[in-house]
Length: 68
Image (tube, rainbow, N blue to C red; front, side, top):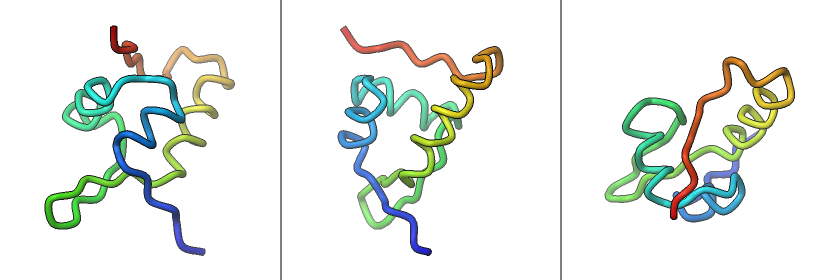
């Protein structure tokens, strides 16, 4: 099954954070991403992974600050 790839804006919208927070998360290695040409795309499975971490107790879930 092929994974759906999300733009940084779509990913941020789904997890309710700003694009700047998504960029910081990518730079820190918190989110898996694929670089295709000049685009950075994030597998939709990362949304599910983050939800799973948060639901599992949250202690090891990455902390991503929401943009202001």
